[in-house]
Length: 115
Length: 112
Figure 1 (tube, rainbow over the protein chains, first blue to last red):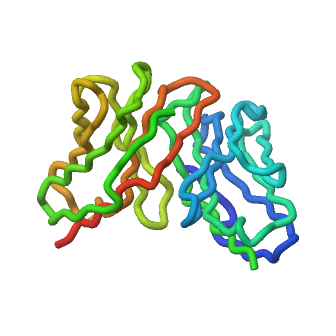
Figure 2 (tube, each protein chain N blue to C red):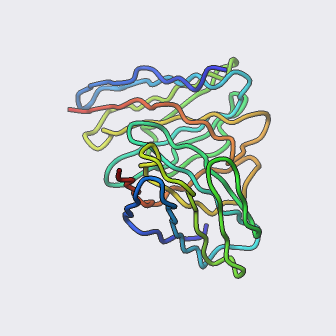
């Protein structure tokens, strides 16, 4: 099976712009989680989607949003970009119907730079 | 969620065993100990998990103390490809409404 894919891999934006990142989970996986990784804060959970519904959400401002489509692909959007949003954004998909810690498969990430 | 304490960094010679400790003294009875690692420029990767008993798989062994307040991840024959940041994560395990909470982890450097 193909792994988790994320597009684009690299992105440069300017402050105030918005950005949309895409994540395609492993075939058959219905749970998609998003994480932000920065040198200062480390890896932080953003949100998790299952069957097009957000099931869990981390402590991020409302500028961070996401959605999941019927084919389980997920997008996350960041509006009104700030310099501090520069980070590696990772998504992970999980098998079958439940979230399982031992079957979280991460993608390579999208590296976002905000100038 | 239980707090964890891990060494900031460790070194290991190639071919030797790497023993990575984790202190999780506030772990609750229904929390498993999960270990993940992140190789540079890649997403995190699941390694192993356990509740009370020691566990072994093709990647590593996990030793959990009897009081469950600490654990040690053992890479029996470390290779250069094991150079990564290793995270110890107490977690209830399966089920919805869950998430991985990553601490700072231990940066393991394997040297030739």
